[in-house]
Image (cartoon, rainbow, N blue to C red; front, side, top):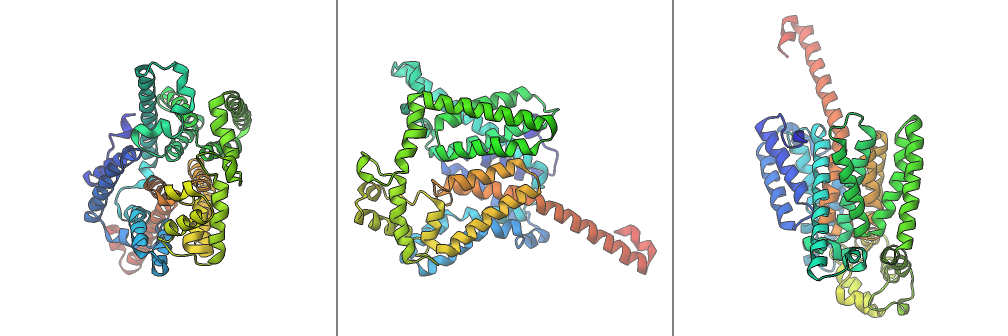
Length: 439
């Protein structure tokens, strides 16, 4: 574990590494800490930037993740609420800044990628432990039965509220960390202190169920049942396949047999997917809101209404259709695909789908199961949340998408440097053989 925090590198790169590690550790907590650390990393990176880094800004690992932001920025021009558009663009600025900083930084991101992933995973594990400790403390303080821990009073948002983070985003962090540690346990024969990873997996599994995000849970089941077995060979493939299937069945049976989990995972899912608002008390199903939103989309399907238009347009439409709860709470689309359709239309949606495709393609080409897991979590959670409209989703998307994409680019840079060195050697040998030794 010491290698996660004690690295052998230049002073400049060490500072970059520790700032990135601090950013990941702070990610589940108050936005203030993440922003301060990101600003510090940005200033440090700019001070030590090199010309080669500036050239990297115009590479695919920068332009493709940031393309959604650049389109949204352009869409402010025809928005009816330009002030809100600027506010949204400011909030989403990390989508552009993080890939640019990764292009400029002198640290080898590929070299330290696994370290940073593990630091994030352990940070989330400790966060989940803290939330369980807080829940248990409240149970004892209010003299509740211990099985209250597994009721709706301590699930989903009620579980994550002590650190003021939306349960779905913390659940996404938890599932991503869980899949990372599972992959390390299964793929690394000589993994140091494997028992630490196994304990982390147990804690994260419990946390994911407690947070009860249906979208994240579905993504997790898809990854372990469909993706995990096919990234291994021989008998291990069959063992993983049957083990994953068995664990999934047992988990689903447990969810169906416990009233609180059944309510959260099954009953509320049915409620969300109904279109009849009248059968629901104190809430309004997502499907009813989505149908109303589609009426807006049909009026401007190609380019949408512009960045910043979503809030007021949705409020007006909710009120017209009697969705007063959604109107008063100023709910967004709760669907990233629909949110993009409202703001930038089919043009924006096509670009977003291409960005997702680019990520999936690179993950499959590089045979990176962790990257593939990340992409599936983003694509699935985007069905129920506006991932790119809230800071916790923005930072998660920007940081890890850029980190994974730089894997391929790092190899290209090394190859280009080798080819350039060889070309210089040949040129000097052709002119003066003695100069070949001074490359």
